[in-house]
Length: 539
Image 1 (cartoon, one colour):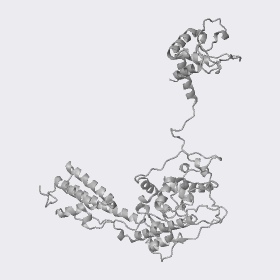
Image 2 (image 1 turned 90 degrees about the vertical axis):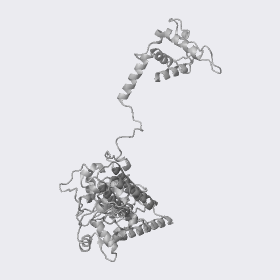
Image 3 (image 1 turned 180 degrees about the vertical axis):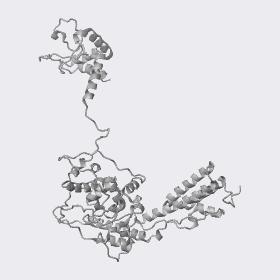
Image 4 (image 1 turned 135 degrees about the vertical axis):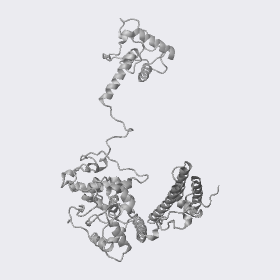
């Protein structure tokens, strides 16, 4: 069968299958390096799926071929976008251009003379065509280097008389994680800001009462906020922990409880049960008229001085994009690319937006908080936020005890309930009833002091006294003193219903003793007998 001179009308499943096999081999040759591992795996898998469809003769062979061509373009476009993100951490990347050698299937189809779609294919993404992102990536790399250098310099300094650092609660490694971010005492601009933009540019805004209301009522948890901050910020002092985010919000909610009793004993889970105001809109991203957090109670409630807009890019590791980005990202990106222009946050927010960017962007569904959280939790390897069962803290408990789940792990022991005790007593009574002879033997031996030996042999008459009935062991063990007669007054023993008095079972006891003597020898000590009964009872 000849595989040259194809036309769209004469293409068969065998022809397309043969072309895809050749394209898979071309992928292995072109993208064999480790820097192209994603392209190599994705293209080979997509072409293999096309081969499977051809092998079962499903659909139209021309449509299968065109879909594989589109998949090839999408994979290479995705690769270039991933490489653009890596520019925020390193200078060199491995982007792909539009040359035919980078498209194994498209190149093969062209050589075979197959007519491609009339509208062609969209060009794949190129980082060189996005100067704003190039500037932002360069600035992010410089910020990361500066932050690392500053951290190393501070760690090498050893002051002669260092003053002890004051912490809000107790010393630890989870404080001052956001020291390089803008102050929380800035006013909020009049406009729209996404949840991801808050985490990237103004992470301390999560202390704001209105921000806390908005994000929690829209489904955010402490772990979601921590994950967003760690994703978008450089974090030179280490990643922020979930509990640190919780304490950021809890401190402000404690101050809020002085004005509103609904926030007493505040927890993230309990916040969902607080009544929402009538004008609350879960689709709104507006931060207009949001209140600043109360940082210092003994200082005037005045906002701090505005900061240069371009400085909001300091400490940003990854810039928000697509549905995570809106007007704040546009403003910071423009000011970072034009550092000679002096604009300040938050006072010049609308000026930059209208004079430099042509107005605010349209808020769409993928910008909403719920969609940002959905994308965050759908990343491979991510875990969804947990809904914890929480309770109020007592005055003596610590913050670390708050929010502990009510249900404990099965590894922990639990105290016995009354039903457990009753059940165990019932089982014990049944065992005693089944082995009444051995149970009576066990109970009788325990009435004798442990420093005495007791023998059940030679009990010939019921008229004998206790002293006459008592005899020592038949064979005295070596290095063992003779038993002494106890002078203590013996207390009467109360037996259970399942037990039988020893006087009524003399003959049975003698037979039991005789069988044991044959099995273990003539010597049978009291403790040996008791242990034997205990083992059988446990079984």
